[in-house]
Image 1 (cartoon, rainbow, N blue to C red):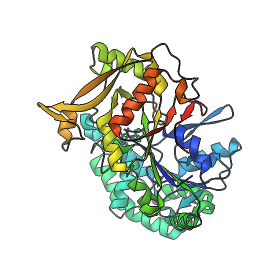
Image 2 (tube, protein in one colour; image 1 turned 180 degrees about the vertical axis):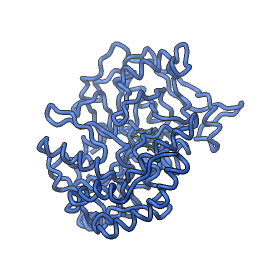
Image 3 (cartoon, protein in one colour; image 1 turned 135 degrees about the vertical axis):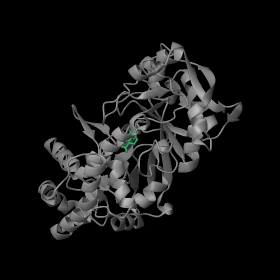
Image 4 (cartoon, protein in one colour; image 1 turned 90 degrees about the vertical axis):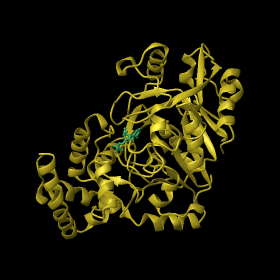
Length: 437
Ligand code: IMP
């Protein structure tokens, strides 16, 4: 299996976890390269469902080395808990490697995340309040604390002291919140440091050596293209590079290390948090009405669209080929895995957005100005559905109803990317391979 970057092509929650889990056993290394425990996916181990937020999926396969790359932000308390949970289930975390250059989420990052959201009021981003943004802010401002700082108590205390001088002032004077002492953070974090020390490694060197020996690497993206700090719907984004380029900086490999870019795309679209979403079918409680509110509620219910990390109800809408084409470009997609196709079996007809309209102008490509995206009206094509056909048991492409195949092939045509994996249910065996090898 050639080295592959796997990315979300929408606003996250595309079903990356299932596809990663499906293909991870073909790789020697599985690397998280951005984000932190704002991500979340469920893996099935025997009869148990495990919710993972930080641990790379490779931990589930003995042949694969799970790696947390330098581009990730790590909440050590969450990681230690996740490791204990996995070990209790008999899943060994022994092979885990953690980059010494990854940044550490501190207690004040989490508090500041929540406080800043509160301050923004109606303009809030809808973050996961896991401290992701404030931690990346410190990284870019060159004030962050890295995993390697945990190796030396003296350095850790010194950096923490410097950070707290500023953080405590902000917490107290801007937000009227409680401050922290060096001692209380050390009491919590130094035991984590002792637990995590054996797993710390120079992961960029390790991966490059492995690649030069012909080993294969899966770079496992979290969130999605439209949440990317550069290419997403800024400022309603996360603070990291979720697109394929982020795999290089977030793992420390050159672009030639990547042979394939697999985009994960739901057969419809969802988003959590604020920000523009042209094909949104607003729920009645959010001001939606008529058929749109009915269709939105049906997508949410049939698709079980509730966040793994936050439990929040996700906003739902029809497939948007404008963002799909954009994702194909900014990621250089070579393949698409289409997930949750079975959810559309609930509809008589299915709609696909082919362009936007705003102020009398038609947009076939992602508009340059965010305000257009906010006011864009989707231009839809309506395709015949396959209501009444249960596709969850289909094992081959030819077993799918003709209208389902027509939908897939139409999306291939309008996105320009081959759909080589089709998922028709949550289980591993509810997947149709269509050219992905
Ligand atoms: P943050 O990543 O917690 O800073 O949140 C920023 C935005 O990204 C918010 O709209 C979140 O809802 C969204 N977000 C972050 N992680 C995920 C994810 O894994 N799936 C979907 N949305 C996410």
